[in-house]
Image (cartoon, rainbow, N blue to C red; front, side):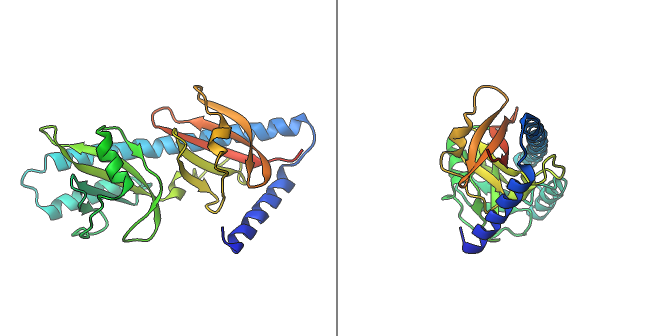
Length: 254
């Protein structure tokens, strides 16, 4: 973390300590209610944008699978229109089975890029599953901007693998506009414990933060954690239909 980022994080934590410290069980109960509302808002928001992304990918897959004699300009235009209907998705990419970028809804023609070494491509191909996958955030080769790759394997009419669809999302797209706790910290993980996003972006989580949540078979839970060197209370919630766990945390003092 840079010096300026570290100073900013300290300021956030001092503000939270001042705002959320209060004696007695009533204050703790109020904080817990805010956390519960907050994590539910985030879970609902992320579930909604992933549902919309799922629909976008299904429509796009049908178009690519049955393109017939449609020329590339018309096909790219249709994919672009589909993508513009999902505000959380900045771009939709189609990478063929060899890892070559074929369509990019932000550029036509698509840049001549070999993306076969990207984990979000190779892991989706290897999984051989039509389920949506949430990838580890990466930096775009063209844009230089970090994004969350949401991927789906595309099979042709014959069942052979055509390639991989990639929905490009910025981490901020995962934050709900409405929040019950304005100064809470946020994070999201895959159910395997891979960090997808944090907010503020400069927040550093301990390597064992996800393990400390003790995510169980239930839908949600609350536990004592740490943010940097500060004690915190964190509520987590699983998404029902996607392999994602979202959290809302508040710094506490005892």
